[in-house]
Figure (cartoon, rainbow, N blue to C red):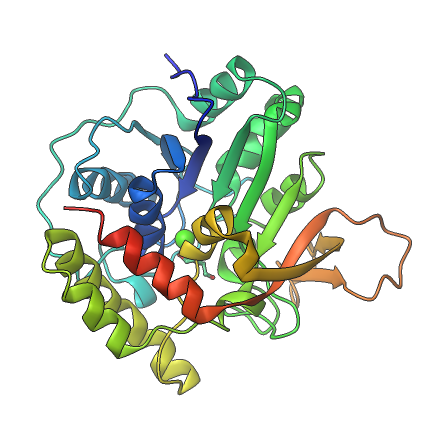
Length: 319
Ligand code: RIB
Ligand code: CA
């Protein structure tokens, strides 16, 4: 049974592969009084599906929102083998959190079926979908039920990278690299697409001071979030030699709540789905040099201080 969206709030679906950064995005969304999280759909990505689904349950319980339904979706990309990222996120996917096993059960319905049913039950352009992992679930909905696209208000995804290259290969960002075919389907589905790529997420790096402010909230959420972030940022700090790591996925939620913190351009974005050398590359026609029609709001700038102030305010609302 799909809940009827509350018209005063913005109804969203979070499609995710938790992942410590996914975790902060989920917590921020659950804390926001402006968003109605209709459900959370897990996808294979950072870690296998069994763990991403389990982690999503852990997070709705951490936020004391066990009524938010969690669904398991696709356990592998559309047409490729699964690539995971335990070297970044740890064996569980949310290492550093030290949280109890979930007691809430997963929904029995497949995530793809629930997303399609929820979209069709809603009005035109009503529901926002927030993919923050490989876009396999969303692409499967769009492939099997293309008519659902007109019920999507906007797809706001974390993925891609252009001016700064990739983080998984020299040219590809992880979410798009894992399932490039899915990303290409999303970009051509006809619903408005906004992409928050590495080009923007790498301009808002965490600081130890901010993580300590999160820990200083004195709540179980603050302790768990700070523990996850301490673990998670080590990889990027070591790799890039920066003072802090990027917090990719929460940019999607921050963009929904404070689009004024962001700048980008509506342009054509295509995905390389064949070349072994550049598989998963998001090719951005930033200077409009092709006749390919614009299909994506590609975000490249963020007010970092505003982003982290917003996140801290939201996390402070949780127990
Ligand atoms: O490239 C960053 C993305 O890949 C984030 O969504 C992170 O959680 C991983 O899924
Ligand atoms: Ca993710």
